Image 1: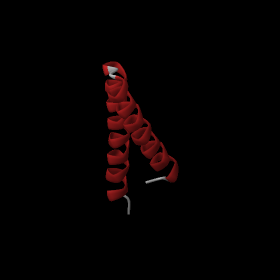
Image 2: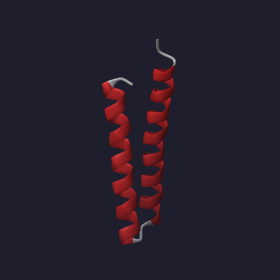
Image 3: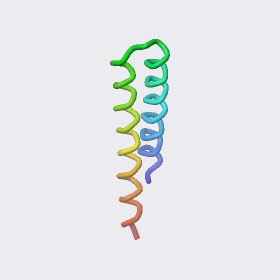
Image 4: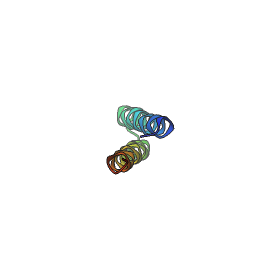
Length: 57
């Protein structure tokens, strides 16, 4: 996994978790949903990079 992609993935995951938690705290369902989507995008980016790494010699 390239360092830049790893940082992007972790950043998306952290931002998503924070947004999701804040949305739950203030009772904002839209913010909670947006945070969950952002977190899942980070998870998907990380998984994609791990698959790419598995096939690199």
